[in-house]
Image (cartoon, rainbow, N blue to C red; front, side):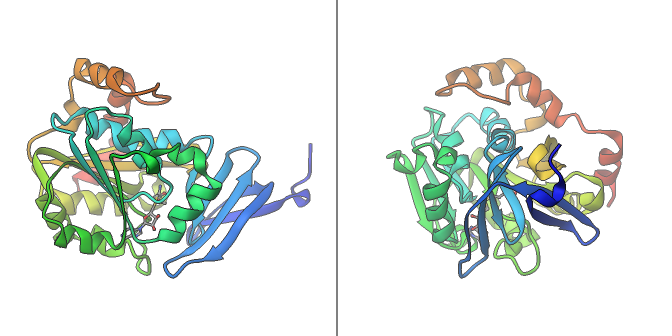
Length: 291
Ligand code: SAM
């Protein structure tokens, strides 16, 4: 068995009192953009990894768990998926998953950091798998906060795939109650807003519950769901919000039809996985029930 001293280590400061470590086989890139620090690494267990501001964003070997969970439960629940909006989404895997749906005619992705998008195209092409070249893709490099206030269009699905809302991150203002109201204005009737909503693990599940509480002030149906993401070494949570659609109760036959209509095969998500994603343990339901 190789000794730990034989490796270089990437340590993720997951919380002030929580550090996760991965051995590093190779560092493809390490630098800074005007918005964040960026590292592209390869680890023995998870393959290539994108790390922003010291925080793992996704890994080659399990990114489909995160991305299929973020996108497909919402998409499967919406009738009109012609026009879809992604806030953030740097690696292009969210764009890839949306564009697998032939019902989508246009997918707009707004990411603040053009350098992250270019680095992902260069070092992580498996993530976008050609999605940036799809004629239905509209990539806008800019602040999603500004975009949602200036853009006049309405979308069947709005997907927030932003970095964690730490106070010095450019994503922080997008997790604010008033902004949730502005995002709702971008939804078409029958539309769903879905967001990556931090960890459902013990050390910071209160942040997730706070987001859900804030969303409940604006949307009739606010449904938390989660799954374990091995590269994050944690249970990752998402929230689907709508005035019209309760994504927790999407008909399994409808999900089967949706999954069957996608180009290529899903790796993680289907009707059974949908049921599992929305089945929350009692302790998490208790946290979410707090005022
Ligand atoms: N899976 C991720 C995670 O674990 O948090 C999120 C993935 S994605 C790489 C996050 C993207 O959000 C980054 O590319 C970052 O540039 C983008 N971002 C952060 N703040 C933003 C803002 N205000 N407007 C648009 N994009 C933003």
